[in-house]
Image 1 (spheres, rainbow, N blue to C red):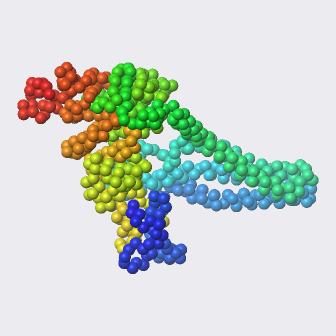
Image 2 (cartoon, rainbow, N blue to C red; image 1 turned 90 degrees about the horizontal axis):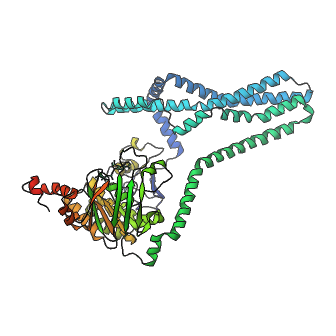
Image 3 (cartoon, protein in one colour; image 1 turned 90 degrees about the vertical axis):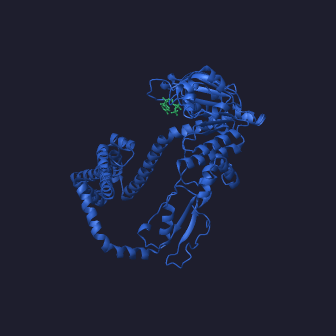
Length: 588
Ligand SMILES: Nc1ncnc2c1ncn2[C@@H]1O[C@H](COP(=O)(O)OP(=O)(O)OP(=O)(O)O)[C@@H](O)[C@H]1O
C-alpha cells in the first residue's frame, strides 16, 4: 500500500476539484480511505434507490421462498414468536404478581389460578429457549440460500462447471454454516439451556409458593428485592459459566504455551549452540552424525520407511550433495537435519515405533538444542515459494532477518545475490510492490459508484493483479535466505531443489552465489541435476528407496560404477553427440 500520505488525516487524493472529500488515515498496517457522507445524505440516497430496487427485492424473496418453503415459513413463525415471547413473559409476570398481591391483601389464595399462571410462564420460558436453539434450522436455510445463489451466478457467468458445483454441493449434504464441533456439542446437550432457563424462573415460583403457603412472611418490597437480586445473580452465574467454558476450551493451548516458554528458557541456559556462539563466535559450520536412523512420517500409511538405517557423518564446513531418484528420501533426510522432524520425537506416540536412531549435532544429541536456536543457526531454501500476502516484495525478502526489514540497502543486496533485482525493477513500485494486497471495502458499494469516484479508481488500481512468474517468486524467496545470512548466526545451509522454475542462467547464478556464502557453514544441497555441483562436492550421498546406497566424492563414486554413476551417465548421455549407453558408460 502506498503510505506516502500516512499521518495526513484529510489529504485530498485527486488534483481535480471533486464533489467528494476523501480522507486517508493509517491504522497499523491498514491505510483507510473514505469519503465521509452525512447520515441525511445516506438516507436520501437510500430512498432515491428504493423504487428501482423493489422489483429485485421481490424477486429475491420469491427465490428464497422457492429454495425451502418449509424453512422460510418456520423462519417467519420464529420471528413472530421471538417478537411475542418477551411480551408474553412480561404479561404473565404481571398476572402472577397481581395474584400474589391479592393473596397478601385478602389472605385468600386462589391456588388453581396461581398454579396455572406459573405453569404457563414456565412453558413460555421453555419454548423461548427451545425456539432459540432452533436457530440451527435457520443456519441451514442460510446455507441453502447461499448455495442456490452461487449456483445461479455460476450458471449465468460460466459453463458446465455449475453441474460439478451442484454435484459437489449435493454431496456436502445438509450442512450448517458453523464449526462442526459446535453443532455436535449443541446436539449433545439439547436440554441443558432449557433447564438453565427454567432455573431462572425459580425466584418467581418461590415467591408465589410463599404467598400461597405463608402470606404473612413476605412483603412486596421483599418480592421486588428477591426478583432483582435473583436476575442479577442469574446473569453473573451465566457469565461465570461461560468464562469457565472459555477457560476449559483454551486450557490446552495455555498449557502448551507455558510449556513452550519453560522449554525455551531452560534450553537457553543449556543450549550448546547458544554457548558456542558467545564463547567462540561463528566460524565453523555444524557437524552432523546420523547413527542408524530410520524414519517413517507420523501417521503415514506407506508400507516402507521414508528412511532406513542411515549412518552418515557430515563434517563441519563440508559441502554435501544428496542425489537419488524420486521418493528416495532426499528431502526427508534434509528435514531431519533441520530437525523439522526427529527420529525420536514424540516417542510416546505409537507411530514413533517406526522411527529410531540418533542424530548428533556437534557431537551432542540434536534434542539437547532448543528449536529456536537451531532455527537461528540454520537457513533453508526449498521448492516451496511462499510469498507472504500483505507484505511488499522487499519485506518478503527482509523477513529473512527481520531486524533489517526496513534496511533498503540490505534488501537490495540480498535481492541482487538471488537474481531478483530485475524482478523488483520491473514493478512500478519496485520493492514496495504488494503482490496481492488485502483490500476490503465497507458500508458503501464502491463498485456501484460513478466512474470518476475517487475510491472507485483507487480500488480498481489496487485490485489490478501484479503478475510474477514461478521463477521470479523463487528468486524473491531465495533473497529471503540471503537476507538471513546477515544475522551472522547461520552455521548450516540446507538447499532442497530450489531452482525448478529457474532458467539455466538463473539457476547457475543462484547456486554459485549460495556457494559463495559457504564460509563458516556446512552446506547440504538436494539436487536431481548432476554436473558442476556434484563435482565440487566434498561428499555425495546417493539415496535409493530410503536407504543410503553410496557415499563419497564424484571421482570415487564414478569409479564404483554403482547407482550414482548410473544416474550421472543417464544425464551425461543427453549432452553427448552419440547418446548410446555404451558411449555414456565411459565415465565422467
Ligand atoms: N509429509 C509426508 N508424509 C508422509 N509421507 C511422506 C511425506 N513426505 C514424504 N513422504 C514419503 O517419504 C518418502 C520419501 O520422500 P522424500 O520427499 O524424502 O523423497 P525425495 O527423494 O526428496 O523425492 P523427490 O525427488 O521426488 O523430491 C516418499 O515415499 C514420500 O511419499
